[in-house]
Each structure stands twice: as structure tokens, then as C-alpha cells.
Length: 264
Figure 1 (spheres, rainbow, N blue to C red):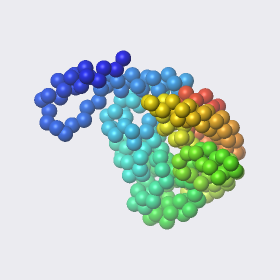
Figure 2: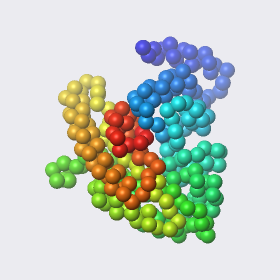
Figure 3: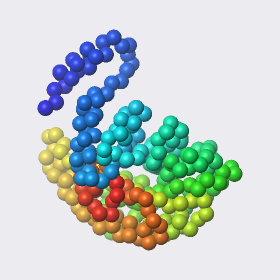
Figure 4: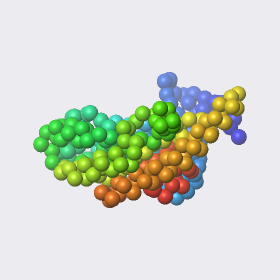
């Protein structure tokens, strides 16, 4: 069981000779957490989020473990930095308006092969094309799907407003536009269910609220599993996807169980 007092004493002894500010990582705990994520993923590869692991050495450590594959980077600039450091299979987590970054990506075959950019609107392809500055490398593209739960005919929305592409039909239309556009290759689909993966369902001292969260999340999981499967089928009809990314730390075991999802 966790023993914060003993851990603090151990950390204080280990860093007594160092000047603050400093940061430390308990590698035993780090490895144990990573192993537990692999167990929960049930054989599906885990893409590590660099937004949560802000240390290149730790990214190298976790990617050397069985069960982990690829990085989800925070920004396009960070994606390019990681690619220059030798990392591959880097997915930029959000759409970007970094024109200089797109120009660099389109001009370098090594970077273009390593980095996948995120979009949720065809207008973002126009921005990338305008930013190419003569670069002719093919840009790898992932399209983001809206995972939010909509109730009462859409009047109530549960979940983050991350993408306007909520229906499989709208997603497929954008996917078809990407697949048919010169200079781009559709390789992935992402659907992050933050209202399931990132919301705690056991809040201390609030049993009724916690139960309401669990009921909401159970309904959201059922609805999303069906809609996500339809969306993946619709997109695969226009492109041979390399990956379908979903889930987060709090929903790994549920998302990994979906046949349509290839990584978490």
C-alpha cells in the first residue's frame, strides 16, 4: 500500500545533495504504472502521451517496454523536435496553425515520415498547403471524431468540444476529402472520450454524484462503441487506416475491448 511519509523521507534522502528547484521520478512506480496500463490494454498497443510525460528520457524508457508503441505529442513544434531526436510514429494531438512548422514538415522527408498531423476540418488542409513554401513531401493526416454523448436530441452535450465531426457520415465526408487530395495521406482516426477517461467516478464524500458519473459513463461507453464502429467502417471504405486511436488512462480496458480500436 502507498506510504507517502516513507516515500517523502526516501526522496528527501536521495536529493539532499541537490539544489532546488528539481524534479524526481520514482522509476519503480513509473514502471509499475506502465505495466498496469499494459495489463489493462489487453494486447492493444498503447500510444504514450508526451503531454503527460514531459521528459524525453522517460519517453524512451516507456517506449522500450513491451506494449507501448508511438507518441501522441502536444504540439506540432514538439512533434518535430521529437522526430529530430530520433523518435518515430508521432501523432500530433491537436490541429495546428503553426505555419513555420508545416513548412518544415513538408520540406523534410524524414520528418514527414515520422509525424502525423491532426485535423477536424478541410480548411486546415488549405492552411497546410498555403504554408508548404515549396515543400512537396506528403503529409500524414489523422482525423478527429467527436466522442461526446448527446442527449435530448442534442440539447444536452456531455464531453469536451474537441471536434465538429460527430456523425459517422460527416467524418466519412472529411476522410474522403483528405484521401482524394494530392499531397496528403489519410492514415489515422482519433476519438478521445475525455468524459469517460478523464472524469473520476469515485469522488470522496460524494456517493450520489459518483454513482451518477458511473451511470453516465456506462451509457456513454455503450453509445460510443456503436457509433465509433460505424465511423471506422465508413472511413475504412475510403482509406486504408494504419491506426484507430481511442481511450485514455481512465478507460483503457473498456476502449481496448472495442474491435474497431487498434490502439489506446
